[in-house]
Amino acid sequence: MKICSVYDAEFKPYGRVVTGYPVAGLLEQLGKTPLPAGTDYVPDDPVLHEAQEAAQVGEGLYGGMPFQLGWCNGHNTKLNCLEFHRDSEFNLGTEDFILLLAKQDDITDDKLDTAKVKAFRVPAGVLVEVYATTLHYAPCHTDPAKGFRVMVALPKDTNTDFRPEGGANPLDSMLWARNKWLLAHPESSEAAQGAAQALTGVNIDIAADL
Image 1: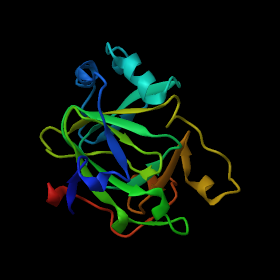
Image 2: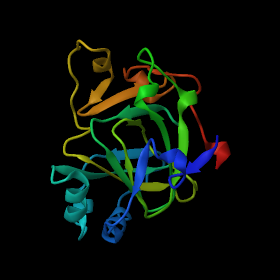
Image 3: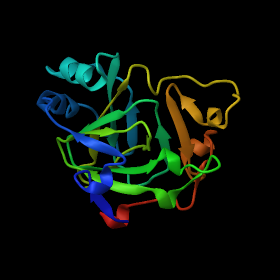
């Protein structure tokens, strides 16, 4: 699979590189978070909010809206799922990492072919915005010895417990948590837990492309 850079023109429909914010303190605090053998996600971690510039960055990114600073850390090379929110997500890593992305308008008849997915490498210390219309999920590592530690900034309470009973719209079946619509590949553990099996095609694994 071709792995592009977030500095390439191909990234423009999916997100942008964000500059101007001081992120050294956030990176320092992010380095204190766990690095599991698999992949783990914490929506909101006080450790990150303790960074000197955390309030300045969060308020700037979300224009004064309530926000949360969490992380997704570990080791991963597979797609498994894609998700989207009603707002942009911001990511920042202590190491280079790779995002597997697609577009919400690539969903056809409530399904998405994984052939539509593209890979983008984010350099360590670079803050990126992933647009609300961009499907994304857990990062992938570039070096299995280092794994990844990636800050995940989102509006407050995103990805927290919420599961509606039914729904009138087909997308309601994909609502997996608060402000989190999830499309699972049939081979994923999320599908085994009842997530909508909305990804068709190969469950992408970039291990051989690193």
